Structures are given as structure tokens and as C-alpha cells.
Image (cartoon, rainbow, N blue to C red; front, top):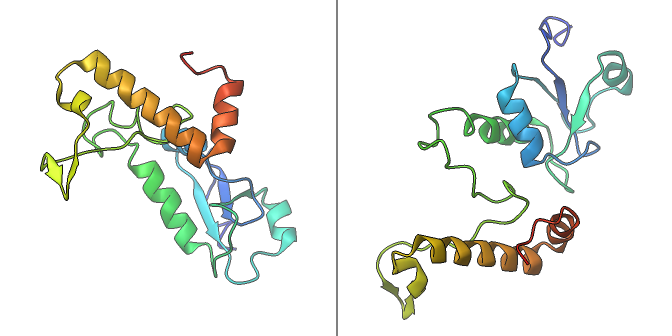
Length: 164
């Protein structure tokens, strides 16, 4: 009755479930640009399969692990979508270089002070040469993705995204 009480009005009905396909940044962006979503959260053993089928619920997973309920997964999905709304992150291009935005993990970040416990900021980042900085960031994003997420790196290569 709770599901039926909320008119879909073109919004997907999402069931937070470890059985669903993993949530991706692409799917988050689609949801953030759409009319919203109806989020359904099971508890412990989940939701009756007949309800999933009868109400055409789309199962969505945060990853290969199980939570006690879907509430935390729903909060993560909401946060991922809200941050993509205009004005939430500041600049319109803020999300363009984040992890997963272009199929890569994000490059390392450095802040002040210039030296921290003997470690310095890479010289290229303080050079003022924006082309060299962009090249360094791209190379670091590719390196980190290749080393830490071979699955993402393989997908990136399949799309022919590397510069060489």
C-alpha cells in the first residue's frame, strides 16, 4: 500500500538491494537529471519477490556487500544525486574531473603547506603551466586507475580513451 500511495509520474521505483546491478556514476547522473525516483528499502530479508515483480521495482546495489536494510544505501544514492544538482558543488565543471566521470579514478590532490612531513607538492602543480598540469593530472588518473582498479582500466581501454 505504501508503494501504491506514491504516484510514479515517470519516476523509477528503485529497490535498494544487493541483487541489483551496481550503481554507477552514469546511472547517478541519469537519476539526477530526471524527475526524481521513488526509493524502497527492505529490512533484513528484503522485499517479497511478488511485490518486486508486480510493482516493477528496479533493484539497485551499492556494491558486493550486504547491509541490514536499504536505508543507508538510499542515503548514499540521494547524496550522489543531490551533489550533481546545479549550485550544490559550486562551479558547473566541478564534477567533470572526479573519479568515474571520465572512466578514470581522480588524480591526487595537494593543498598547503608546500611541504608536509618531508613530502612536497609536485613541482608541475606549482609551475603555473596549465597545459603541463592538465597532462600530469591525466597521467596520474590513468596510473591510479591502472594500478588500483584494473576493471575500470580495462573498460577505459576498450572505449579507446587513452591519449597514447
